[in-house]
Length: 351
Image 1: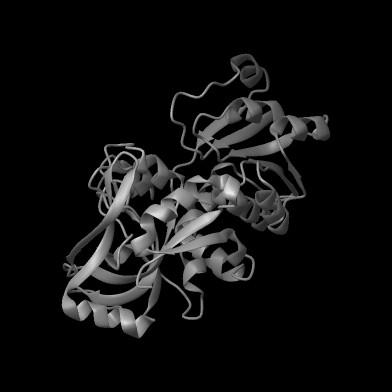
Image 2: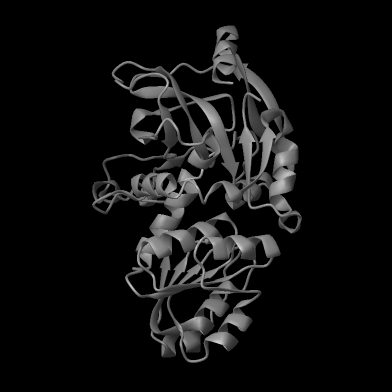
């Protein structure tokens, strides 16, 4: 497969996905990009579709004309001047670029930089045969790591950030609300951080099966069922992963013990409601968790790639659907239909 795809670059043309307007996505043909100094070209092996992509498909942030794709794994295909990375190396792409000069960048938080850009969200992404990115965005991966599993590095990094933001430690009782890809990987990361028990809510049977396989002690159909079962043994850290129009912040307040932390990872479409009296009386802390940062001894994304490698045998089951690039409309339709068993839907260029 790799050799066939490499031959395609000789024609200097490639295919790329593009949002055509609210609810519409298609394929465009364009030139293969050349990497500028300090950048590399990645021959994309796999790129995932997440909830943010579905919001963008709906017209969120004026996405018409945008090329999606921020969950990117691939092979170094070409390098610009000043880059000393061998061709053929397998990589995951950390898709944030930032100014590098502001207070937030100086403290290791490019995710907070007011001038940051995210490939596939605010600038041209990797749902294409090739993408060019700064060499500083690359994380090298083992050659024998499955391409599809490698593309889970980005969502894993989101979960590393969430678990770190919540301060999950040894013995903590953690609740994860929602069992999409972010919820499922949050279970795995929380367990890796030393959580004593992780409880989860899952809407669909397949989500519940995977939640248990990834380390959840108990899985519930709703937060109400969780609360009934927990009794007075409430939760130290709640990780909310649903967003949208859900009432999950209200649910989080219900299952949280006094003094607990609630981490908001899900992207809400409107201003979510929260029960003020319960929040105040329990003296809760609500923390947002946005993408990933470099404020620890090991950056969130780098730790995520280590977890992907360490748990490579557990992760393939999360990838429920794979589509060729020409099938991008079908891929987005599948990703939007959780009732059909979609967990992580990926687009595989070059097949």
